[in-house]
Amino acid sequence: MIRQQLQYTLGSTDFHLGEKYSGKVRDRYSKGDRLILVTTDRISAFDKILTTIPFKGQVLNQISAFWFDQTKDIVKNHVISVPDSNVMIGKKLKILPVECVIRGYLTGSAWRDYQKGLLVSGIALPPGMKKDQKFETPLFTPSTKEESGKHDLPISEADIVKKGIMSAELLARVKKAALAVFKRGQDVARKNGMILVDTKYEFGLDERGELHLADELHTPDSSRYWYADTYEDRFSKGEDQRMLDKEGLRQWLIREKNFMGDGPIPIIPDEIRISVAQTYIRAYEEITGKAFKAEVGDVAERIRRNLKGRV
Image (cartoon, rainbow, N blue to C red; front, side, top):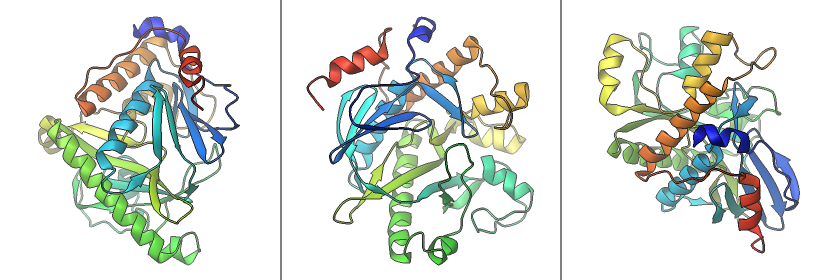
């Protein structure tokens, strides 16, 4: 099914649903007080759009819907309805200008910065830590939101307030909500045999100033997952963790193509695209505990049918 779907992947949209903005993965249509978010099959790494992955948009949208439902008692979210497996209709919010990154383990870019002796979003970590080591408490390591094509930059909490990006009171609310949602995510993931390693959140305010979670939530695009049953053994041996996210694609790009975002975007072979699709589908099933159900066919046409008369 994945191989058959290669010819039908959703790389772009043109639904005439309102003012359109295209992000790395989602196409957002603004209509009145609502946003229609269409999750395409595009995949990005190192802030560059690389190719499309069969069924990826469906996986991401359905995982987000699952997590928004799981965390709605902690903080409000933007979801109004999910009329199609690739589409979410949400409230239009004033999105806050800081990306909220929560880290439970020393890995990824934080590990690379630590090796260089750098602070992690203004936080000085203790000496002698090892790659993939768990933090005593998760770190709140925000970053700026840069223009498309540019890397987001780490920023300290103090600088967020000092530069007038957010007030201290609002930042405190955001941090509290982000850490609580991350804890819920880790608890649910652990029950399913996984570790939610790190993630990033987007928050926004409604017209009354109430805080809402927005965009996507705990997907393989915005989060890193490891398998819990092999963590300790691999950590003790200094081996790479078994991953359930797109870090595997990043590592393939680095190892095989020497690509980290600069220069021409390499061609991604179909076999790699199929392998990545299998990872995303496996992520859906292990995170939600449900069998993934999909059909081979034109995603854009299906979305048109499901949205007809509903937006």
